[in-house]
Image (cartoon, rainbow, N blue to C red; front, side, top):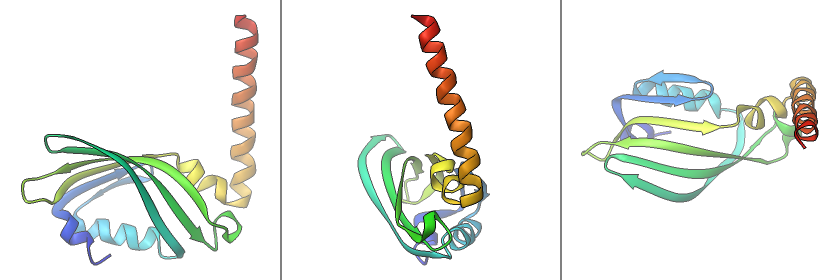
Length: 133
């Protein structure tokens, strides 16, 4: 967490499927809250693509937290887009990931609802495919 303010500009913006946070101090508080109960967390970073100040890369986050997934480690795939300024600090950071795979499917009560919805969507697509042939 001590690296957050070295990584982000003071007025940086972070956007992810859970919300929009403005300012490096608030971004740090967000990360501290979001990962406060994590027993372990790590990221496997994929290939980075750079175009001017824009940097994009895919990643897999490996997380273990007692309150999620029965306390077993799980992985979530995602992608990040950063705008890195001339001073080397990030002014804009947007993460893309499946919030259901990250959170909702790991909470027992919500897990069943999400799986039901996904099952209905899959069945609908299968019926569409069958009707299209």
